[in-house]
Length: 285
Image 1 (cartoon, one colour):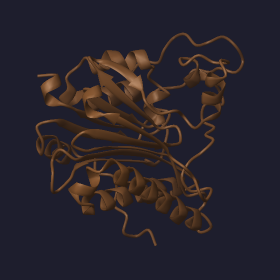
Image 2 (spheres, helix red, strand yellow; image 1 turned 90 degrees about the vertical axis):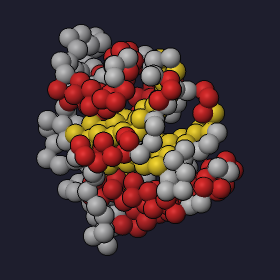
Image 3 (cartoon, one colour; image 1 turned 180 degrees about the horizontal axis):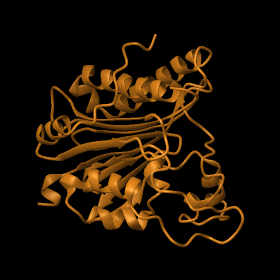
């Protein structure tokens, strides 16, 4: 029943085409990493066919045995794509409608995968997406993929991780930097597929409040600190997706980790790594 799902598009020609359909930078890239046999991440960055000011960015990190995670993340991304390109620009520009139907679309994805999990081993996924209309940006998140905004080359994480270690962080038991070194870092507390009636975290921000948006799966944020990402953001925005993936997968690991038996050194490229980004051209030219 998933036969119609397409593989994630990653070749350079399609990336270049996306970037030049609009004056802004809209780009994405995914890498299998150095330890996995397949890529269970999926990603999309597209503009609306009626209005180039309307944009969709999304990343999903599949969870499950065999190829179930890949199927789940692809299904989530392509369901969002279909909904977005078929929705009218008037409805996308209506924040109340946009928020309502984004939640509805995510619930549909969740319930479909929840039913499908009995046919597949697991069949679940994280999902982080950003929909940009003429005035606002709506960000939805389930799982431990992340969304950041960029303002004056400084980054700020907008989403919260649905994970065990994020709970420790909120309780003051871990610092933000310690999260990625903790042995329980891979334990997520919520994702799409396992349960009915899931509720995504929704954040609405004004477009004037940022210069750019970054979306990552944990294959990036487990290997790069916020301070490292912020340094990379100063580089050429047109090649930033490639720069970030290069550092996350093939860069040098840190030499020091927090002390204690609960911490370990994560190897670069230990997981699939995916980035989607958007930057306003007038903010960096």
